[in-house]
Image (cartoon, rainbow, N blue to C red; front, side):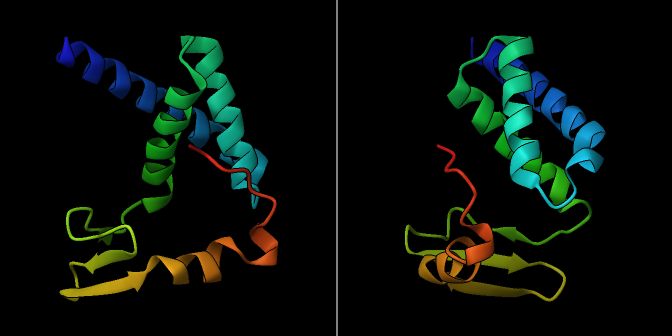
Length: 118
């Protein structure tokens, strides 16, 4: 049963990534609109729940914007208050307080129009 669930999620993620790649040019500078459209697309075409569509779209969006960038967040080393960001090219690991991420990225006036995603 778990293999089926994984295959289903992979199929959804591939569909989401394809959708966003095809429609990205229509939403230049408006990633939240693209994200919301993709969620609606998954819910409509695959009849999945909104929560599933949001989660899958989040993963696909990460794939879309990361491209060839090898930097990543070390989930196992991070906590609820500190994100451990790793740059394998330089060998440096950055400890970034989550508070700083909110102050500099999320709570800025330009980004206040984003809606929360669970």
